[in-house]
Image 1 (cartoon, one colour):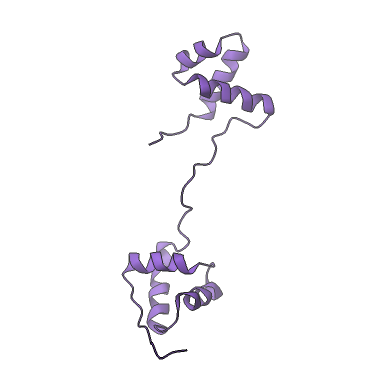
Image 2: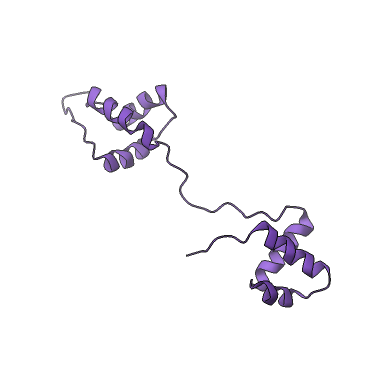
Length: 121
């Protein structure tokens, strides 16, 4: 598991120390970071890309925040026979667009079930 990213201030101090004549291994020891991190900060500085941390990968924030859960419950109660795709389209009319797979995850979280009318075409 990765720890938190080093602060921009620390990154700037590392780059400054190396620019003032400190070797990369010395800077790594002095600031308790890896030599690879020192090299990366120097490369970013040289390319003018800034020393900010890169975004961390992972799932994006919830498309259906908790404040909208009751609206989703009401929609499922009002239209129990809709397919997931139809629920997603209906939801998108009044809220931010969601995919059917997002709805499946949210239905599980909220313990929502849908009545399936097998005679429906």
